[in-house]
Length: 374
Length: 169
Image (cartoon, rainbow over all chains, first blue to last red):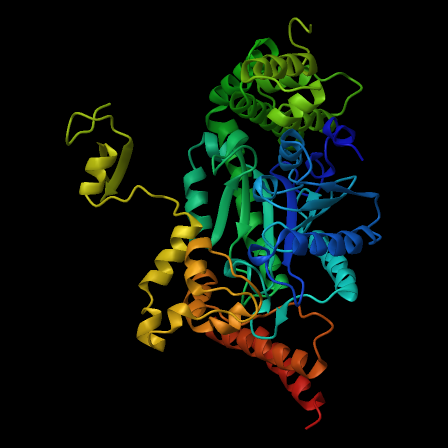
């Protein structure tokens, strides 16, 4: 598999489908595992790392996971390729920037990835569109069981799965739900959500870009505690209380926008559309912010039947033979394809930031039927 | 906007307080905010957190005598001093060898918990699995009683009894 085989496509987890897709982009579960009898990576020489890499590569490649799998050598990949894998959430920032022999085994539909020699010997992940953590766990647990038949993991009856950093100890599980919360942001209630999440020992990060800045109103909510609570108990917390409550707040905020402040909503959506269809230079940050408003507009029309003038004219742009849900996929695709590494790889070469901003604007204009498609 | 205390630097910290329905705002620069005892570090890097946590523990020498700082893992050559720098352990045995030093940190990171609960590899012998399962159910039972969820508690109690009676003495 070449990187360009995936760089033009939308990944399955970002398809805009799945349960509660108006507010939940995707669900992800990661498991951290280490081999029994091998040192953790910080104490391994390159030859020991290569030995671990080859062993885990063979094991993970041999699994029948219902899709073709490929291996990408991360240490040999170009920095652009590494950044693209990171933008697609197939590897972590740490894996992209790490040192020494390391790689990733990935399913072509991108629902599964196994990072080898990241912080731990093995980091498995399963990603699904919408809110479906049980589905993620079922799949990753079965993959983990099959790996465990072939190798022994470092495990203690007292502390569970032993990880290089004590913060991942126990189940080694990291549950993440990627949420799109533009109405909570617009109505100024997002801080309440962030504070509540932190009080419950949950980490909140952005989905795109560096640091914790939540560009495009995308928030990734993850557990931090992994010891002393079982996988199913944690999933139950997310499934039964946490996430449904947040979804509910976001929907209420959308309803409130519509009832009390529809002019401000229309203003945001219309401005976003006008800029996206006419701008000739657009930064990644600005594109994410504006596309987020468009995504909100279509979702409100599709899921709430909202009929404000701006939402009607926004949806009037969608060709007759295209369903609104498909149009959301087009918008999601733009979020991904306008990321810096995607732009450059799909264009075939390195571009300086100004050229990237011009190319980004051109792609968006063309997709949204703006003026001057050239 | 200038800092309202020194009136020289740009105000980068904006505080809104609502006390008994009365709203007041403060706009300060980082220096003056710090003098007022307002922390501006919203996120502490993990490494610093680990080092701080280890720093507030009684020193290794205080607990184990002067040689513990030099204690080295025979399996990977790791010392606790390296952990305070790198925030990563050297091998699976470090959890046992440096258990006393790591335990406060483990508890802090995991909401006070220090025992595994959840998936157990199938390779673990069945009597050990059963022992772990019982400990986990007992913990859930204690929590259910504490939260006054008596139906769940009764269910858990029955499961514990069943495992205990199934176990050959």
